[in-house]
Image (cartoon, rainbow, N blue to C red; front, side, top):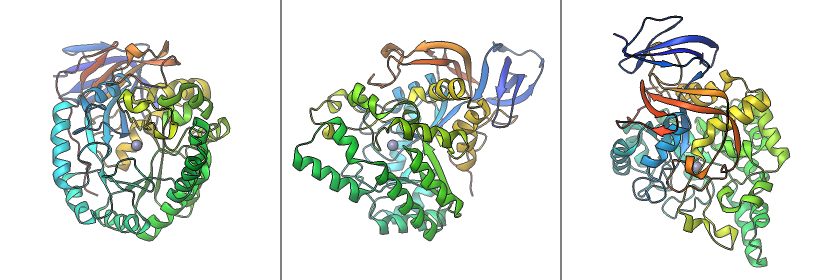
Length: 448
Ligand SMILES: [Zn+2]
């Protein structure tokens, strides 16, 4: 017997959108069609849009070890409120970082207790841990993350070119992608040192120390190393249209390169950093309006593969310092990814809902081989978000579910509100409230 029918909404996949009922049995979608038979429970979705649950490929929940920064309990609640049903946690800033099998086991066990959504885990590449990558792959990481510049954490040092190249070779052998934070360490260190000598500590000084050129230079080098290593590459949080263009050039030459950007690069500009301050500090930094518009152009043309939140919170005391360089970076906007794509994308720029379904669910499930995830289709997990496209709202501190309610989105207006989020057929967020009753699951990628 069918457990639940979601009735009469517009069901959106990466391919099309149709008005249909969605029947759910044992957490999976069992039928999609008009006027399906009744079920034990029904959700009236008439007038709503059913999108596949967002798979956020990039968050920092900092558990175990730094749950005072966030933790998966609050982090996953924020995601659920924003329409997400799964996330990929980065190997930092948990303590320990996920750079070996014991650290992986510790994180998996912690998140299985605390997360209300499903999750997967990134492993890390750091100098000296190449022999651990196979064990991490065996345990089910979805890929490996490396930094080309200072990560901010001494226990997760940047990868020099040889570390990155050899890590990529090993990742290629294991059939997994390598994600890189691509900014040129050499340029940034020199520009930062110059500011320090001159006593320049302001917001504009910080922005000037991390130019678009530094991003482009690192993307080009990462693409070269990946091509030599025969590795799949994933450039995280590309902040600029020129950065995407550099990655696209590499793709045109045959490099298997995935392009990720974040909602904040699509929504804000460097003028917003000056207005908002610490809550809008991130690296790479927000860019000028011209770069933001070019970034939108690449997304609308289908060059960008995925939009991840890079939800990266920190306690308020780390977000206060008269010297802007010393303020901990990271934007805690995990609840707002779909909001930005619906409001600034769909309503304001004509981004089709089918593209949103691809950018936030279908592409991540395909690329990372997530079984039964990523789309509204018979046989898939019933991971859904029901959205009222016409509803307008303003983000308020009180509506955020993250641990520290420091977000650049507070006070911003959006059109397109999440009404319900369902994980494997179970409502986890309904009309402003978290209603999850059981923890999420660790999801391992299918074998290549
Ligand atoms: Zn990140």
